[in-house]
Length: 452
Image 1 (tube, helix red, strand yellow):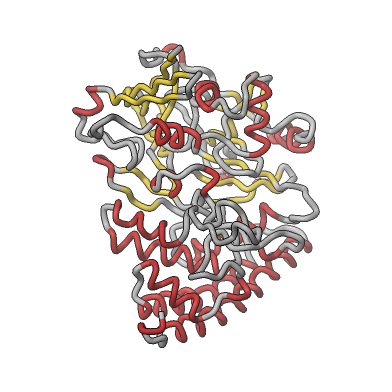
Image 2 (cartoon, helix red, strand yellow):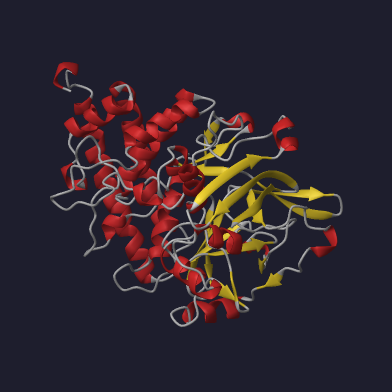
């Protein structure tokens, strides 16, 4: 039997997605009013507004949907509470699709929700949030009032909330389900895992450092319940005044895996892992594939420069886990892409006992400590980057990082001695990386083209 879901952007019906379960066949049809709208955009480059001869590939439709679902434990919780199998992608997006990353909502109804049906936001007082964080091993953080809440992709615990005004101005947190009020912020509590101490502080430092350096990172703050919780302002949400009430406008985004029409399992360049028998297989998202996405953007030169800065910044902070789902694009009218602000940046190398193989290789190098001038020169050639430009940008970012890392380590956001010592350790690491990068990009610019 074939079932259908409607895809919405605010009150506009974008498309209908059909699924035949037994053979796992997927279909897509854009709504005619949407196709006639000058501001219309496709779901992804693989699913253009103009239907290709023979129709859309069933696997491409499924891959696009699968990327909207949570990962790890959040996915396990959604599966359990909804009585579904992990492989039931259609059932999961039906259950969770009211609040995904980007602009899209998925419903079984072919008509928009009536204005009177708007649910009342459910406030989350800080004491309740603190209790829920403490109990999350027993009651998952994605479950509230007996209902599973959508969690954006990623492995960390997250909670999507609406923040009525800035925290420093006494802002309150709410769970929202409606068409008018979508979530505006993502809460990422500290893991409490002794193997990854101060993870929320770590991400806050790295994200704040990027913003201090003038780089396009998402806005973050630390909330104390009193447990540290990273609060990330969603860049795919814009709060607008709609007459006498507020409205949250959703913006459509896709990650690099969706832009390349690759499965979730391909978010790492070595998509089959690093075991000796398969380490040569590199079909996942690489820097070369990522930079290739610049051809799909409205401003190719600006997109490539943003990607170069992103790649160099990951090196500066020691983020070995910068993978294909950690770089995203706004989808503009007509389907052109534009890089979003950066997110999910952590200095992974601060923690011992983890496999810190690079998610994407610089050239052929997957180990941070082994990155050489030749590897960076090779990286630049593969990605179509002028090595003199890489030298200029690398040395500029390194100079900024040395100054701003020290300044961020002194920020008042970090409250106790342990947190301050931890961020000072990251700052010292960034300074060493900056000094290393300064020399590496200079040497990379000197390699003769014939040797690359």
